[in-house]
Image (cartoon, rainbow, N blue to C red; front, side, top):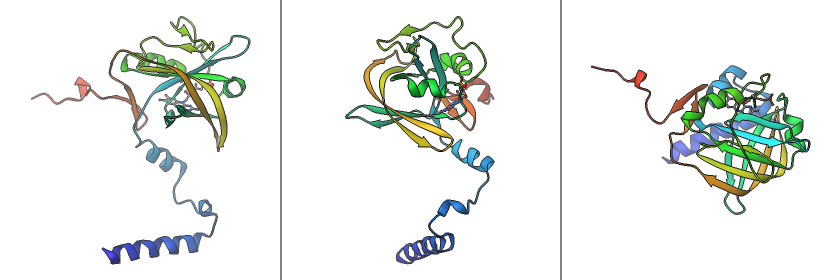
Length: 193
Ligand SMILES: Cc1cc2nc3c(=O)[nH]c(=O)nc-3n(C[C@H](O)[C@H](O)[C@H](O)COP(=O)(O)O)c2cc1C
């Protein structure tokens, strides 16, 4: 055991030595490999919404949502610098998070597309901040935007939740390896004998 620890720390030491301080300089993987590896992290799916001062509604499908802190209650998501709504999210003081169930898969698809009229014929309720929120979500949070951080090709939004609602229990919509999944096995995946 001791030997293994020694060998482990030796190779870590050698790696640091050979790469120098800027360890990211010698990346050992391609972008495709990175995407595939990150896709191994199974997540839920959310739609993050907001609205501008002149009442324009914003919404994007995001699986980068994560819990940050219980006290104060803080959450985060990251938004691509290529998203059309980035500037509007950045200038808004609030955002809302809708955690989706499998029944909201079509909604997830709709808010993952940039160029369509996302809000046409979509049923929603309006929070106290003016953020649109979807009935049938597993949980919803309304947040003050507290911080923006540089996250490379994304901007990280950290918000403090001031109101939340737990919906009726339902199967969560999951995302894994670039596909939607559910906790309940799809009958088409089952082998019948
Ligand atoms: C399951 C899923 C998760 C996604 N998660 C994110 C995310 O966390 N951050 C992000 O910037 N885009 C994410 N996207 C892509 C955005 O939803 C998509 O680019 C969106 O249309 C951007 O909207 P906009 O260009 O109108 O602002 C995700 C897409 C899917 C299907």
